Amino acid sequence: MAPTKGRPNTHAEARVARSNIKKKEAQLHAAIQWCRGNNARGHAALTTRLFNLIKSRSTIDNRLDGKIVTGCEKQYCCILTHLEEESVVRFVKNKNRCLQGINKKQLTNLILDILKIQDYANKKLKGGRRYTNLSVNAKRALQNKKLSRSFWKRWDAKHDDLRMKRQGTVTMNRAMNCTCDMASSHLDALAKELIDAGIFTNTKQVAPGVWTGQINTSRVFNHDETPQFINYGVDGTLNGLVYSGRGESCKRMINENRECVTINPVVSVSGFVCVCQVIFGTTGITGHMAPKTVVEKIDNLLISMTDNGCQDHMSLLACYKLFDKYLDKENIERPVVLTKS
Image (tube, rainbow, N blue to C red):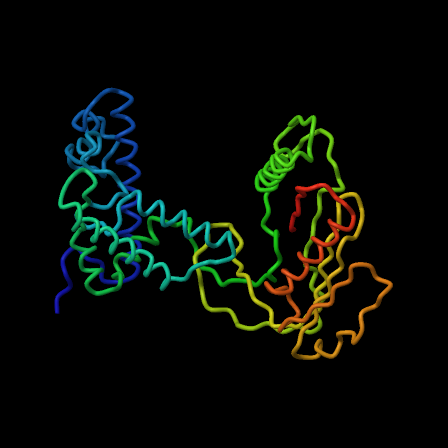
């Protein structure tokens, strides 16, 4: 069978054709800049003989008039609008930054969900300025419940700032992604809480997250569970490639299958230990570590038992009840502020 006219027959010819297209596109861009700088049209640009790869003046005029925008798809073949694509790209990058990168299948489901919502909204709106008619390609994607290979080719070409990477692993640690803005916002909210409770007086905000004033430290408390892990074992393995931004790390958070004994002290900012709670597991090797009798010399010691040695709602309620008794015993003025790390 004879080769199709105008199409390259070999990989070498294809590379040459792509190179010529890039050269022509570069000349076209230079011609447009020349026309704008000299307040001229396509005919004047061609008469200079500086742009020999461009044969028609209408090619330049159409771009000057905005009829053709290089790199933008035609509206009738787009699956997503420009705003929707920007939102999806931003969402994908943020998911990876939160250690929850999504793969190609999850991204496909996300785009199809967007199309379903738009199709449902169109049926309700039946016109108006918010009505966005789905293109033929979008309707076909909804019908087939998948995205075509041509869509993914255009997607990869337009969004070269997204990369498919294999995820590394990182242990689940709280506050590991805390930023300066997050910390400042938290401290400002805490300061307002202390002011409302009458604990923080003569206040003045020096900078975001930085306050001066007088604090009654005996009415401010903090508690946090501190697990002491006994054995280690990671459940799950790497699950293929996910999207991430160019130059950004690609990791995922893993759950670890391990037993622990948890220490949950409640301390006041003034330096007193109000409640000392120790939580043991009822199953596994930690189930044999719980003391049979409570050591009487330790004030406000609370021994709790949970399934895995971590805090649950019942053990937390028992801790708060003992803390309430401590406030009554020490005659501490209320209200108080109890923070949790």
